[in-house]
Image 1 (cartoon, rainbow, N blue to C red):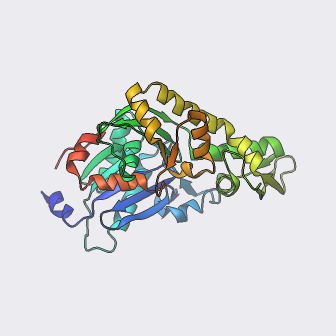
Image 2 (spheres, rainbow, N blue to C red; image 1 turned 135 degrees about the vertical axis):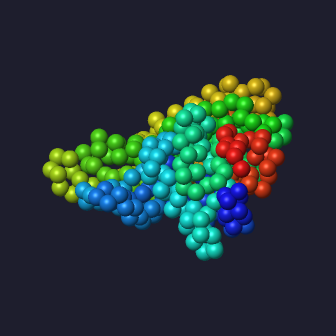
Amino acid sequence: MFNKLLGKFSNDLGIDLGTKNTLVYVKDKGVIINEPSVVAINNRTAEILEVGLAAKKMVGKTPGHIEAIKPLIDGVISDFEVTEKMLKYFINKVHSETFTLIPRPRVVIGIPLDLTEVEKKAVEDAAKSAGARRVYLIDEAMAAAIGSGLPVTEATATMMVDIGGGTTEIAVISLGGVVTWKSLRLAGNEFDSNIVDYIREEFNILIGEQLAEKVKIEIGSALPLEEPKTMEVRGRDLLTGLPKAINISDDQVREAISKTVSKMIDNIKNTLENTPPELVSDIYQRGIYISGGGSMLRGLDKAIAQATKIPVNIVDDPLTCVSRGAGALLDDPELLEKVVSSADMEN
């Protein structure tokens, strides 16, 4: 009863709890939080020093008693307490300009398709411990499709490929359900790791993940570019231990990430092979939709289209569609009940 009363003064939230970034959608306000899923903790006092962007800036630069933790690995909670504290921080931040002293919102959270019941329970418990009075879990691919305005409840196929930081979710959706799917533990973070490994093996230079991500964003591509690009990269020479700078080209970055791109495309083709013929016909006509930060890799849409012979569409605002889809469900109880993956049904 007390939770219901507090809930009337709380903003219900749609959350994309990502490996790399957490996005929070609030009704009538849109996505108001888009910050890295990183928490900096003082191990001496167990005090949280920073959350989100400020904490990300500390990664790889902290003294011994401070740790910058990424509490989610491949879309799965690896540190329950830190995830709870991160969610609590974001929930309180949403309500910082309201008169709500103890926020008790309803929360819809996007999750990977292949989470076990134990892993789903961990997400629910973390959200409830952070202050949510009611938690709904929805598959990220479904949330991305809803957030992109695609007709998920109709008797026609929607093929959604959501490429996040830790996972790539491939799903064929029809009549409000997922017909065939694959969940891959490789996505944007894997591209970064590929670049780190390539530079270490080819140049004997060690660079950090943040620099690798910058290289991917600035000159990374899945297909050759019309105008070649190069970028200066600085790291530690593994032979001398001293700083060293090199120039790396888009060709080299493409070579570094090529195996991961190929794996993604192979799994998209495998999902199509396991899809009923009538739905494949719909997909051929309407195309494949891709979302998430990874979908913004230059030429990835064209590479998928060439391999599958099916048109590929990048959805509008691919970074936020999961959180927008999760938020939209809060205003549509009938659709929420139909597509929800798991829920805490207590009032």
